[in-house]
Image (cartoon, rainbow, N blue to C red):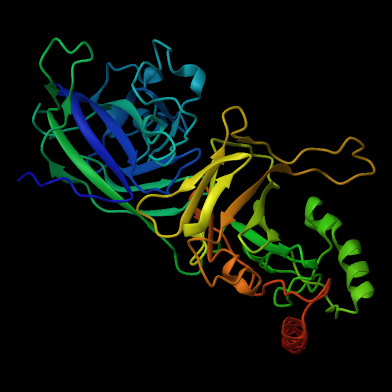
Length: 449
């Protein structure tokens, strides 16, 4: 029985293209349908159910090339004349990775449409041609399935990426054979011998932490509301060198530009200057590889503006990065983004989608300073101002919270937001936020005892 194809955040189609008695060639197509979904350096895995093994591939490669399980197992006993040094992988659960861009036109490993993107799959709104990835695989079968029509798809599919949403995949479902148009347009379409579809949806695993965080600041307040303590998780054992429950210390603006390990002196000096409480031990870091700062830049009768800055604290660089902010009340007044490409996201309420301009869509990783013996490491950084009009949002109150996002995404991952907002109190925290901050510190000190 063949079923209709289903919708999902991500779909994987397993198409058998050619089949023989002992082996077959299949194509795997991964396609992103979520406007905020994304994968970087994707890793695809599944379980073989009938002792199959991978002999050859085009467009992708196993993360581990190892055929020892075949040589010393039942596959080696059955395929006595097969040269397993030419095979690729005999794991029951292989992990497949994409090839780099330079392999696209490689006649041996590439030449597969939508292959070889270094594992990057972006939302369709960014670039439809980059929202999918494909590869082909030569699968050898084992008895008693030595028949052209004995075709069993892999089970228990899973896909992961670096700093990306988590996906939960369903079982493969038999669907009508995929159609492949003739590239020249002269010949009839060809069809797969058999096709299965796997539907994957974004999920939030219980107890999992975000992988990015946000800090808030405003033109009317000198202090930065930093990312939350342990926003992206904390070490299992801090040995009381830091507190996982104390609220993060308010910061001067220059502290955003240095790694967390170099902020303590700045944070203590800022607290002494403004008579802010300092917990002992100090709060742990946010432990996020990427952080974003949302800064209220201006607010006037006819409009307002914000500045967004993205910091990459990892050694890993992000190509074709994107970020998105959800503004519950202010989004209808969106006008322009000046250093990024930006637009409201169709089909997603009150969300502004931003990506790098051509040639500026590469967020570099953290690097050494000019004088690494003296100065802290420097994060990769991208920044832009965003302007809004108030004509379409009468009654909006920017300082009271309408100018701050309710959700922020980086490369599809929803980021941790601060629990406090900057207050309009002439260069210092307003009494209500200050009291909240003091209470949080006292509570954390009580919990440490």
